[in-house]
Length: 258
Ligand code: PEP
Image (cartoon, rainbow, N blue to C red; front, side):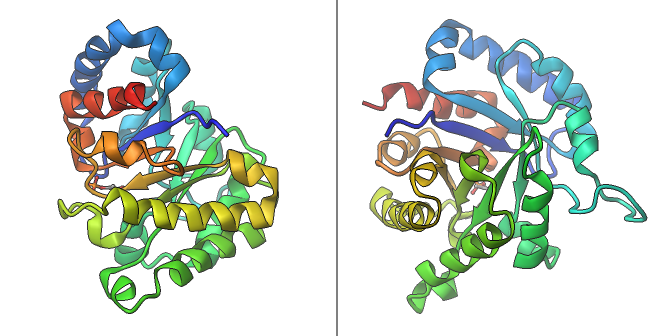
């Protein structure tokens, strides 16, 4: 089963609109020579902070690069100060939205039912969810990785049961995020294969088509080996995506996959 790899930048709370514009000029010029190969071999998305979506979205027009949001609220409108709704993101041209990022879970107290409600809100909309799952170091050390990841996944699939292959999953071991410590390709593949099996058991053939990204200290040096694993269908990239050269090298690594 061939799945188009997706390389998504998660800028977190970095890059103002002016910095995003400069990033884009640099990034697009680095990718220009590979444009046709890229369109066929990899999909690229960038998730800036919400106030930057508008400016970046305008800059991305015609580039083939997709706009992504880092989060959204599960309700469509109402008294939710500081929050952003699905229709606001659709209006800005977003194609993807991260949900359940480990920083949202750990720092902002998001739990599985809230994340499932966000997935349900996205179901049937023009925006595809990138559902982030992953275990902490303590959970890995006590051998609970597959249970934790399985629970994070099934809590969403039980509620948003019509997503099919619109869903993208990002396996991001919490101990590898922003730490410089990457899961080995074999360790990552083992969890990706378990996620693939869980998806196929529940969704049949659609489970085979769902892209499972790896995230956690991906950089230009380790991207190629990670992306060569059979069930790693792209990457969610934090720190290294802030630098246009590093992010371009990660995206270009997809062209080397046999
Ligand atoms: C992330 O936060 O989604 C992430 C993968 O970060 P980093 O690449 O910096 O580990």
